[in-house]
Length: 123
Image 1 (cartoon, one colour):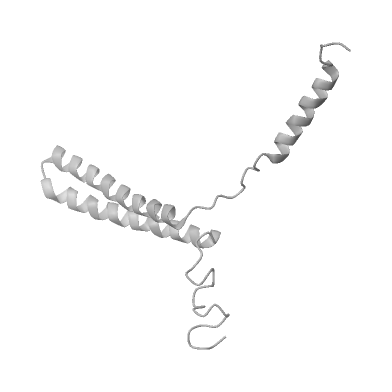
Image 2 (cartoon, one colour):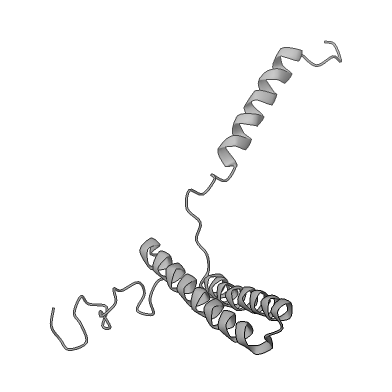
C-alpha cells in the first residue's frame, strides 16, 4: 500500500465537506427583525436629524443674510415637523410589518384582554 493519498477519494471528501458546510450554513434571512430598542433609536435619530438639518439651514441663511433669529427659528420648526413626520412614517412601517408586538403579546390594538374583545367587553 502506498503512502500517497488517492486523489479521487480526496475530491469526493472535499465535495462531501462542502455540501455539509452548505447544509449547516445559516440561511440568509428574507426579513430582518429589529429589537424594540433599535427601532426606538431609529426614530430618535430621525427626529434629531430633522432638527439638526433645520438648525444648519436656518443658521446658514441667518449668517448669510444677517437676520440672526428669524430663519433659525423657522427652519428649526420645519426640521422638527419633518422629523416627526418621518417618525410617524417609521411607526406606520413597523406596525404594518408586525415586527413590534404590543404589550399584550402581539394582540391587536383595542384588544387589551388578549381575548379578541375590546376593553368594554364587546367583541
